Image (cartoon, rainbow, N blue to C red; front, side, top):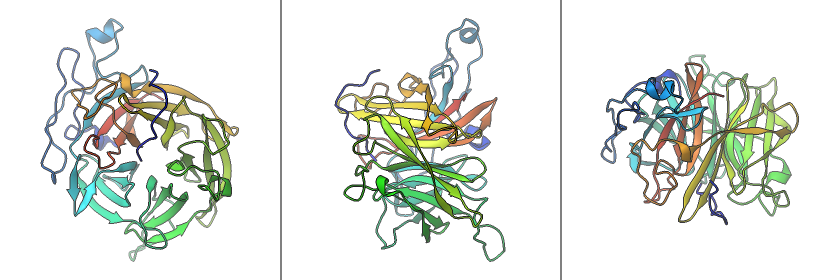
Length: 373
């Protein structure tokens, strides 16, 4: 979803994704960034070779930040625009609002126009797509995604777990469960207060934007994008559900989280230790996007989730990226989807994707980050 315009100016992966072939990578301090050529509109990502992902040498020895650093805690190890303005099996590969690790070797990517893609985890090339719908057959404003593999009670004809998808929509808002073929299987309860007006205090186009499952699979979280009507301008609600012994979810605790001024939550993703990576995002016409990566408390230790800034993505190296509209850093776009895809050298591999809104001046862009949380 395109973020609302701010009234004030901006203030200031699995091991497969680490493989060389899918992302433009940060080059050493003494070399310029490598580039990936855009392929034809129906092609998959480029497989150009990439340079090293980290800098070891004079810059590090002299205390200067490495060439790929966004901050002391976050480095940018590559990006790709290869899926921008492409199609797969008749579906537009864009409007991407959520990512989630799927079965081995694949990644799920959700479009807010009801398309759910299966991507190759190494190349990011689309391998399948299903279309989702609500109970009446209408399209969703689908924004959040969880692959619920280990806990599904569904069985295939061969007797093995098939897995399901949990998908949030900010239309009502809602969280629904779907089969791997897109069949609607059920719907989770939602507190009346979080429903969009006039039924509740949620803002239209500003409710369930993020969705994540905590380690162990017992707690599901959905983050609102913006405050409820009547709440402080920086206070956002995060709703939880607890899994029952039958595999369903019942309503759990509700948490509060304070965003930076003028920003909303575009995604929330659990780390392996249960804390939350939070993408805060905003947009100012004529200036561009603000995108900040925050680390929040593990839910359950009180109803207020405290945070600390990991990086402002405007401070990342551009690596030769270009922007089709004004941006503080040409690397920036409307980043909405995020997934923890693995570990490397004690850091988390994190993949982030932008929602291009099927707009000529926006880009479907994947970033590969390495995060020390």
